[in-house]
Structure formats: C-alpha cells, structure tokens
Length: 286
Length: 215
Image 1: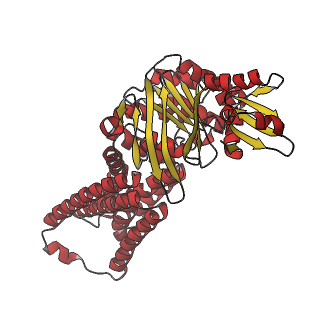
Image 2: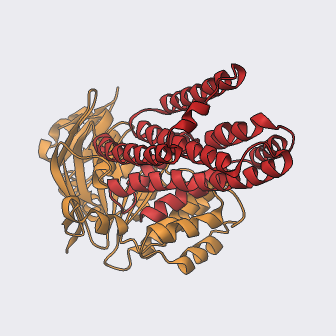
Image 3: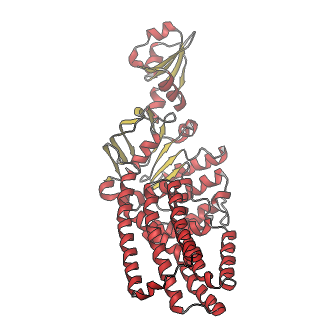
C-alpha cells in the first residue's frame, strides 16, 4: 500500500517547546487520527506538513513529492480545515466561490454549490453571521470542492453538534472509499476517532508515543483492572503502561490474548483511544 | 494566482468598509466640491482622497491579524512571492476608486468655483498619487515585518505629517509658486520614477521579510 503522506524524523525547536523526531506515514485510503494533550505538538506537526513552518531537520513527502520541488502541486491537492482558520468574517458565503475559483485550478463551483445545499448554508449571509457549526460546514465545503486527495482536519469537528458530527464522519468515510484519498485528523474528540480512524498517532510532549493501526489496537490492546498480586504476575512485555490506584492497578495491555490465555478468570475491557491517551499521559509508561 | 489573492484582498476591503463610511466620504466630497472654494481642491485631493488611498495596508493587516488571513494565505497553493505580489496589487487596486474620484471632484470644483486652471488640478492629482504610492509601499513593507499597532501608528504618523504640512502651507499662506519656476512636469515625472523605485525596493524587501517570517 502506497503512502500518501510520509513524515520523516522532523524536529522543530522553540524556546519552551520542541518537537522531536516525529516519524509516521498515512497510507492511501486510510484515516489517521492524531491525538495528544494541548501543547503536545499536534499543530506544529500539521504546520510542518503544510509547509507553514520549516522543520529544523527531517522532511515531509506528500503524494511522493517534497515542498522544495513541488509546493504548489502538493498544496493544491490538500484540503485543510483548521479550527480558527475561517474565512474573513466580512465576506458573504457567495463570495467564497468567486475567490476560490481564482485560487485553486481544480475548484469545482458545482460541487461547492451542492455542498452548500447539503449543509443548508445561506449564500446571502456574511461569514461572521454564521454559527460555529455553520462555519465548520463552510470550511468542509471549501476543503472538499477543489479536488483534494488528502484532508487535514485540525480540531475541525469541535464546534459541531453530535448529529452534524456524525454526518461529517460519514462524509469522511465516503471520501476515503476512493483508495487514493486519505484523511489526517488531529482531534481531542477521541470518540470520533474510535468510530472512523484506521490509524492512531499519539504525540506526547513533542514526541511520538504511539502509532498503531486500529486493528492492532482492537486485537491486542485492552484495559485490565486488577489487584497488585495479579499485576506483579504479569510479564512487563504484556503491557505498555499502568496506573496505580489505592486498592487496584489499571493496566494497558498490549497482548491481551496472551494475558487472557494465561489468566483465564480475568476480565479485560477493550481499550478506547481515550484510555490509551490517559495511560500514556497519567500512567507509568514501561 | 496573484490576481486571485489580490481579488480576495480587494473584496475583503470592500466588504469591510461599512455603508456609513461610503456615505461619509460622499458627503465630504460634495461639501468640499460645492461649498469650499480655494482650500477645497487641496483638502479633498491631497488629504481626503490620499488618506483613503493609503488605508489598504492597515485594513489588510487587520484582516491578517484578527482573522487569520496570514494563515489562510500560507495554506494556499502559491509561493511567498505571489502572496506579497497579490497584496501589493490589491493595495494599488484599492486606490483606483479614489483615483477616479479626483478628476470628477476637480471638474465639479472647477465648474462651481473657477479658481484654478485644469493644469493646477492635474498637478495636484498627480502629486497626491505619487505620495499615495510611496506611503502605501512603505506601509505594506512594514505590514509584513511588524504587528498591527506599528502599521496603524506609522499610517497615522505619515498622514499627520501631511496634514501638518498642509496646515502650515495654508494657514501661514506660504507661497509655493516658486515651484512653478521649475519644470513641474519634469518634477512630476521624477516623482513617479521615485515612487516606482520605492515600490520596487519595498516589494523585494517585503518578499524577503515574508520568507524569513514564515520560517
């Protein structure tokens, strides 16, 4: 399977924060969720992927090309929806089409109109008069109307109600049905990623802590709540992290089938993305 | 691409200006054209129109800072050079309506008051345009290097400087007719040459500043 995005060992240092050796790839036809607490480095990573920031070291390849040689080609094939990256509030919704068709060679006005209809966005309203949810829908309509093959959605669904969020998630799944399309979603809403992500990338304090496919997580990862005796009986190779409570230990297993096989009377819950994030941030990582 | 970026900036500027602002400008235009004789022409052409012509860098910087226009530009499939070129083009396109208003004003003013020759109006207009080109270029370059406050303060400073000069000339009744002993058309041509040179240098500086800031 070809990779639509390859991030190779990128680092970027600031006075109080540094992004260190970020490496991951997003295969074609896949949805990759990026999680991490506030300030972990998600937006810095996205900025490097979008060539808005130049990394101190490492490189980014998108569609097999690099920004040094093909910045325009790459950017014209990426749809970016970012929280805070709204259109100018004084513009009317109808203005967006006029502007975008002058900025993107592949801009499809009919496609944009159909998205406006589908999302029930009024043409005669200024962007500043749209609700948060409507603004997000408008940004989605823009991102999906210029033939983008890679969608990057940075906290994009955070302002949407559950019904609309569900509709957007369905839209994303529809988008990646074409095996040439992929989506990268940095998000705090881990329940959304549980529903649709094929890969999970977890960035913690500027480093990649975890990068696994959802199949691998479903098959191998689980949360075991047990006493100290059972915890001490576990092999350290069977878990990634644990959280010590007053009377029990919560363990993030990475080899649940083997553990369930060894200890037949235990109950292992499936690990959600939120569980994984909490274990890595609050727990003791092996 | 440059035109697309300029189109976006012009549209934002156009939408950002309220109807009140256009009405206010129209009223001032009419008052100065119809009611004010000797000082009306210079007040409108050299102060009002020129001040309006040079507001673009401040207003576009405001859009960049407050509404993430900067980030939006960086996400587009265009080079840094195109982004800067688009901004320069937009700033000069925004000047056009005010530039067109100058001869209209001159015709009305001249018909009502009959105090100056057409040549005088023409020179006044060209001089105002030269000043507007230079102020816009300088302010645009600063808008790529500094924050919103610096750009706004610089704009106010330059405009105040012109107002001050204007008031000194008008109130002290300073005789500038010595300028007419010079070849004034040559003077205007030199002024345009200077304006284009300043614009070229400012553009190159702005491209370099923008590239450095991005990193």
